[in-house]
Amino acid sequence: MKASSDEQEALSHANGNAAIDAALSLLKTDREAVRAAHWNRLPIAVRRVAVMSANLPKERADDTLNKFDALERGRINICVQRLIKQLEEIGRAMQGGSLPATTGMH
Image 1 (cartoon, rainbow, N blue to C red):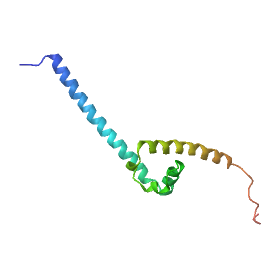
Image 2: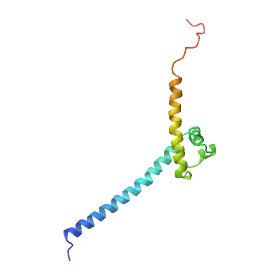
Image 3: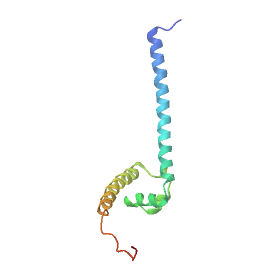
């Protein structure tokens, strides 16, 4: 018994959806691995600033990324974005100024 063209199309569509679902699942895993790699490669001092900007204990900077829940990650993300803006303002404020007095060099 041969499948109709509609049945073949439905089967093909289902197989395609399964492949897409598998690929999306793999991407989700890979995204988390990429995030963890970014977290791990940063110096501990940078991670401490990020964690402390969200009023979390500095020791949390030693934690692996998967030990942070979504709320903690969100809080750190928002606080880091705010800190970046504040640091940009400090950077602008630090531009210019008078040069130090020369030390006898001509």
